[in-house]
View 1 (cartoon, rainbow, N blue to C red):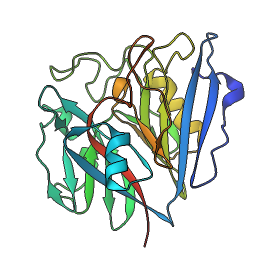
View 2 (view 1 turned 45 degrees about the vertical axis):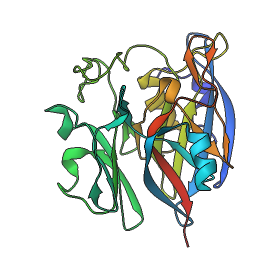
View 3 (view 1 turned 120 degrees about the vertical axis):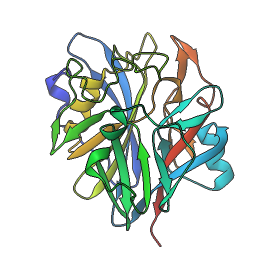
View 4 (view 1 turned 90 degrees about the vertical axis):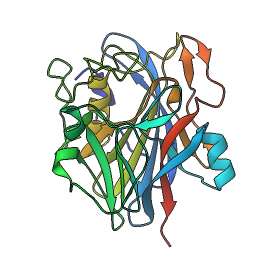
Length: 260
């Protein structure tokens, strides 16, 4: 595990709150993480499509949403979601991942208010409820499972659908995790002299240290956005030490909505 031993296991914030922490990495680098936790008995996870793309903080303000994190990838310049998206059982317009990775890349699926994270092939072909595909899968059965050299989901090859190799190096990152009774949302700062970011292996180790039994990577880089109490918690950067004011416009998001 690439995280320094004294940061694991980490103390997950109490449900309904966000916490900022500094991580010391094994090679002496440091980075900032922002972690929000939500009680599954009180909070429902939903997928949202941001029509025409929008900066997540501004979109949340307009929609009255207090808690959210960036969702999946998108295709430039038109901004269509990259990977499968469904809301209330209805497939939304998107650009599919190319075969064979469309069947294996990780999804979060919410059916009847219950969330699950799994490879697409483990889920129904026409699922009910909400679904968002991103990846790669980071944690399964409480253990980190991402290995760059294995490239099970085809991200290091870029597969002609990405403008960079998201598996190579440390970057700002976002992730969703499921714990026994909580939803865990994580944003990682990066691209700064003071914030190194994390590799995907380090992100997987972090999510396991936060007691997630399953976790997946979301869109990161300049798109990394975590909203808590209506405010953008992380510091998005489009390039090294170049702030992305308010975050980059994104196409999809995961919302943490109080159950009624």
